[in-house]
Amino acid sequence: MSIRRYRIPLPLTLGFDFSGVIDTLGEGITRWKVGDEVYGYALGANAEYIAVKESMT
Image 1: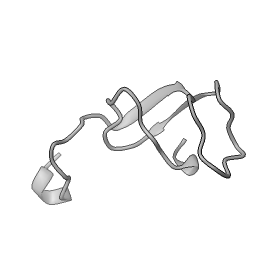
Image 2: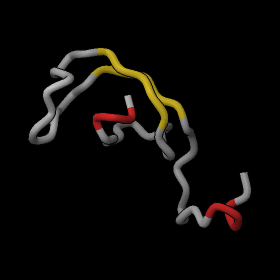
Image 3: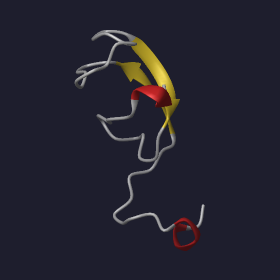
Image 4: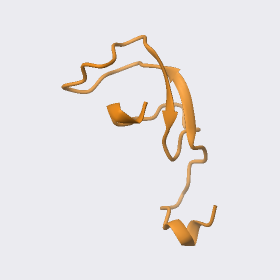
């Protein structure tokens, strides 16, 4: 992946795919509940915690 080509902000947290358990939900989320197992794709997915749109899982 070229940082210049995709204009990724630095510093960069690596990772693109994630899996885990929902810890907290934002307002209006109806598809999931705390404790659900999920997986999906998001830039920076190697972080300890990530926030993604409901549609990305």
